[in-house]
Length: 603
Image: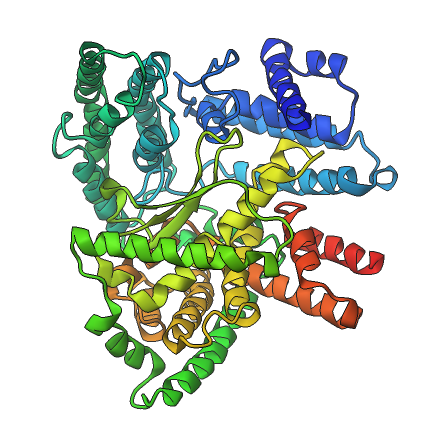
């Protein structure tokens, strides 16, 4: 009942904002931090239909005004949103932090940091490559439409068709923005342009009838009770027509633009190559790490971590009788032995999914040993969509919908099973699923008496830091590798991979390394295949600073745990430590340290 009341209150708040904005909101609600943060969050959500559907609270309800729409991608809208951000930030100044306490004080601190960071990023009008091989509307919207938009009734199917029509508009608005970026000196490197063109051509190359926006629809329609086959066929036919007449031409137009840009594009990898690039990178590092660490400090940290982890790996390899060559060379040779691989067939792919589900069942059976609150939301382990697997990472996680309409999903890239040998899979699962992102993101949705912002986990260093910390939990606290030295090597190999990220990201964007220098360093210091390394390096090219979040966050959480263990001695309770870290939701690392300090003092 309490949850239902809160849900109704939240939906009512959204409706109030839709009808009358801030004045209506505050006429009904007292001016508290939570309500102020919910106000600006609701206002932004109302303008972002994709975000509302991703949250999953009001799709297919009486309040659903949005699920037949897509957002506005024009520059005018972006400038309007920046103005709203500044207004929202000013609204936080009405509160005196000295008079706040508990969760309200924490919500204020988090909201202020978040808004300052959003404004800092948004003030760079030309800051990156809005369409690239792994992100932008040409990649994100197909997955949104096929995976996030819920088709459960004839009305929701009609809204899907409406969004397909909207997709054509979005593609044109985005093409105009890419043209504008180009005139202001923001053009991707030649190798990014080539990969982006390949991805777009692959998506539309088989025609409308074979496009994922159409082929994924019949199975959803078959689940709708009472819909006759003629109506289903008509909806599929209309989707095919829209894709053929609207979506594919939009992609073709974007492809033509990128082909034209390719004629004069340069090969430089770092973001320093665009106007104001050094400042853009500094702001990206601050946003992604939520610290004030400089590129030089992060680069040095990465080099030190690579050396430390390499020594640990050498010790394990020597104990297994493998002593010739570097740790990377030995892992690359031994790790690709047939006994470590699943067959690269449909049967082998299913075996890999079965193995991952088995690992998840095993760790969930022991999770109570280390955690007080366990995720009530279900987890699905599924393959990365085939249309995006060429440029996708080995695995990633999408959070469950707040209303329970969509489970948490761990996506595993099954294009080539050799990219994920058996000895690397446990760590990948522990990071993405339990006790990693599935625990962290589901926990944030369970927190009570906090604004919606804190349930959405918008801080990369915390989220990815927890995922990497979760890998260490499995090894050191649950001893899951006691009889699996290969699995432990996989864990260390993945941790070193994250340390290498610090080196190559700062190398390209601050030290002006070339793409080839970054690829060579990663090949020399990880066991990843060359194809995988190239995908990773090119990801860092278009997402400056994001790769620095993982180790930064992990080391911060480890340091805070060690601080608590030292201060509390025998009174230290690991389950309680995890509860305080997870059940306050994501936040900047400096604020997290304050939370842990207060918890230590209270105990």
